[in-house]
Image (cartoon, rainbow, N blue to C red; front, side, top):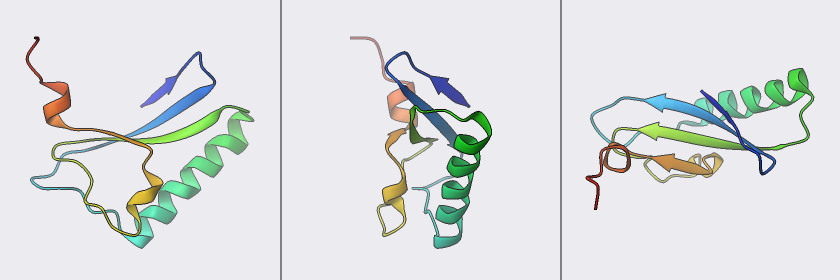
Length: 82
């Protein structure tokens, strides 16, 4: 999913449904970097690109998780109204 914001940022969203924190491997980090690069090349956008993950339980921190700029979890999406 893409979110093209008016503030000069595009969120490239990845959705992952797993029963625990999602682990980004070295190989998948490269895939994400390639997707971002290809998106910039094809669209010729000058906007900043944020890699955003929508996951069940979040991203497990590791050396490859720094590619993620933002993350939303099931808890964020289904929080009761205050």
